[in-house]
Length: 158
Image 1 (spheres, rainbow, N blue to C red):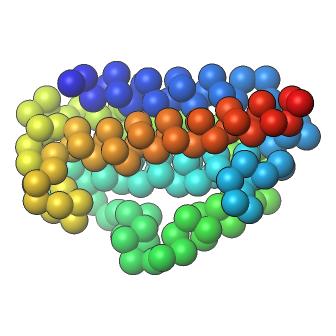
Image 2: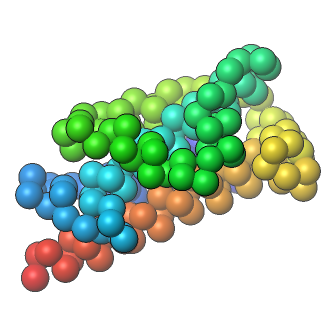
């Protein structure tokens, strides 16, 4: 598996679903009570978590406050979306992209063996490696939300 390609494919899939979204469509309901902008804010918070995780693997002991919040709070997603509610859609997209690029840069600094080291993320589970985490928590997650966004866009297009 190529972890960098997995990160990029998930990212590009999401970006394709966001191409040429009219301004009015960013506030429409995509999933539950979340708008398109809210879904993107949710994904931006996950990209932030990934930067913290990868940074802590490169420099053990590096604080991971967003990861810690994710593990400790059942309302993590809603809280993270609320933090970004007053931002414009382009601002939320810029944050998402900045965290994605930072995560990709950090991933490239890790030795290849680190991605296949079972138990490297003890809080994720002793039987899983970093590749599992990237595929399930990021690639699959983005694909799921990209599909929801695509359905929403089809619905509003009539």
